[in-house]
Image 1 (cartoon, rainbow, N blue to C red):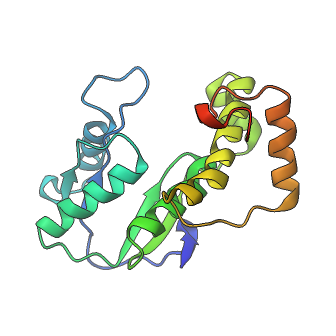
Image 2 (cartoon, rainbow, N blue to C red):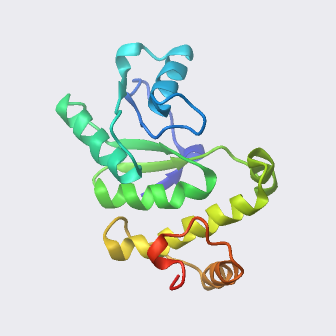
Length: 180
């Protein structure tokens, strides 16, 4: 079952947290996992409740490696909160569901409008390129075995094709730039 974080009931027991390792743009080489770990501790999460997974290079690896880390420590997992960029929620969920189908996945991102997101990035073309690339992955990755299939509405597929044809291709998978 896929639910957004807003519909999730809180639990009495604080869960163990894992932090992923993709480096943040402009950050120190230690990656975002350490930044998230530090922030969680600043917010009052006990340091021994935060596990850092420092090896992942992508969402799929992060899920696989985090699962192994938790299983290696005999941490029971029934639900997981995925935090991602707004336009990456579906891909993160579909990847997670493919790789670890026996847990409940809850996707969350900072709520914001497209205009606010463009303003935060300061590059409208880059944002559209990222959206087109994310959409392409939703269409291609299930066939490559990386994620579960997601329904793509016809108008979304048509918009993807129009944007791709208009040159919004910098974030497309290299072997699919022309084919879509």
